[in-house]
Amino acid sequence: MSKTEAFTDLADHIRDELEDIILNHSIDDEELCLIVAPENICATLQFLKSDKDCRFTQLISICGADYPSREKRFDIVYHMLSMTLNQRIRIKLHVGENELVPTATKIFSAAGWYERETWDLYGIYFDGHEDLRRLLTDYGFHGHPLRKDFPLTGYVELRYDEEQQRVVYEPVKLTQAYRSFDYLSPWEGMTDIQLPGDEKGTIPERGWKQSDKTVGGQK
Image 1 (tube, rainbow, N blue to C red):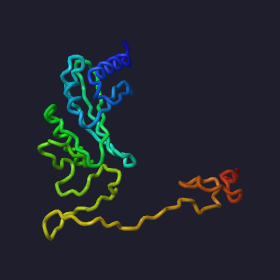
Image 2 (image 1 turned 60 degrees about the vertical axis):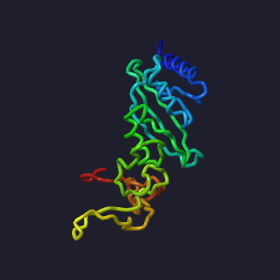
Image 3 (image 1 turned 90 degrees about the horizontal axis):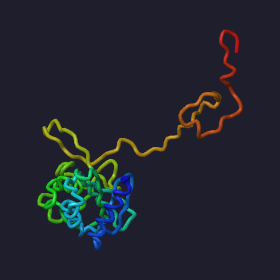
Image 4 (image 1 turned 120 degrees about the horizontal axis):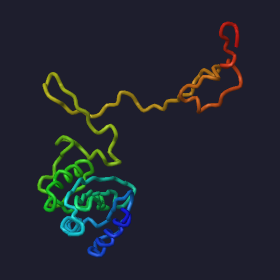
């Protein structure tokens, strides 16, 4: 049996057992992906962990993705591993801006760290999490840096103040305004020499050419 056939059989088994929960599924790059509603994530994880034909007993990670143009702008993706089947599976949720997602910490203790990271970077709240606080950014950080609408410069910068003998936060100050650089070379006479940006202009049919170069009096 090929891997694709094995995943197809597994997908059919899961859809039969979770008929009212699985919204859709796909098989890409030899990995099965299930799409479920946020309110059904715990039931899905519990089934995949305990079912004798699945045994996805390890939660590898929880990550997020931001699609601002969508009504439900966030994706939350749970990655699970079955050592018995030697297979991985993904469970994907589509989540709105202020939508709560049930915590998975009662099923997988490792979910505590993953959910903290997802909240820290995307601002997605996990209902029932007992310690939802910053993990990768500092506790005074403003915003969620992996959102597409978060500015690349951030809101504040920090430095060590010698007088106060501590790290201080200050509003970001750009040293210069945005400038658009034109790299077109002004050396129009050097027609056979290409510099970065020269491809934007047309090469004139005049001036010195590489073929005119002489070495020792000969071309």
